[in-house]
Image 1 (cartoon, rainbow, N blue to C red):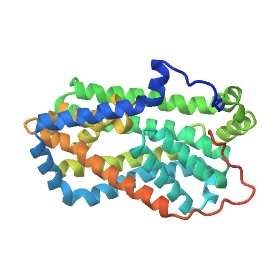
Image 2 (cartoon, rainbow, N blue to C red):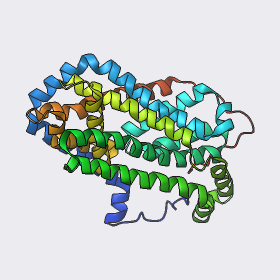
Image 3 (cartoon, rainbow, N blue to C red):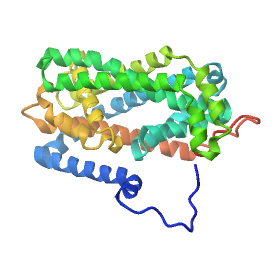
Image 4 (cartoon, helix red, strand yellow):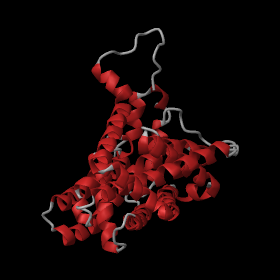
Length: 340
């Protein structure tokens, strides 16, 4: 990307300011929303519920690590034979870094996937790593669409197919399927690398290799989609355990309903880092579907317990990577450009 001349004045105005600081502003507003929700439902009751769920926290964290790890297996599957040549500990390191960035930094999933690509690039090639980072977003979106279908069925059986929650989950399925397939099709058929080469000087020579790497990958990566879908199934089990930890029923149906609410919160808060505030609000609004309409503090606590598990795992991931002595990259491998 073109470097700014340090002697030139920085762009001024509302739009440039929002571009630089918008994510942080949305994050601050999300934190305010969480605070207001906790005050509205009762801080003491929320605190007692979260503390009471502490015994379940280890299994919740293990399930968090299990379901998110499937995304790494999906990336490996998309890389094919080149991915199998990379050492397993490299994938572990890339997963730890990517997850920590996704959860703790406003960069979110795109930033995490770029970091994953940068770690894998010396072993599988910069163009291939970048191509996998581009396509994994389509894979995860399509997997979300697939898990939304059983969530919709379970929710429809509880509150009816015409309920606003059922409609929201169905809309999430349609939207994520459209976006996921769109990403997979565009990255496969359009000359993305050529387009980027025209826009960014540093990618003029890297663009054709990027397009070639995209064409090497399956048009529809069924194996990667299956792995991500299985990961979302594990996430459903995780949310069933979280619901049980706040006093709800531990059943397949309750897990699907709980995850369906999570998906709606993620859809509505897509632009907010880690969807802060939106997940809590979604559980507050749809507490009746969980049988917690008379106890909204427990419903809001579901999102808070999930965040505690995420922050615990993300913090441990970044500490582990900070202490991890990285291996030297193999000689002769292509590295990803700095602004990949």
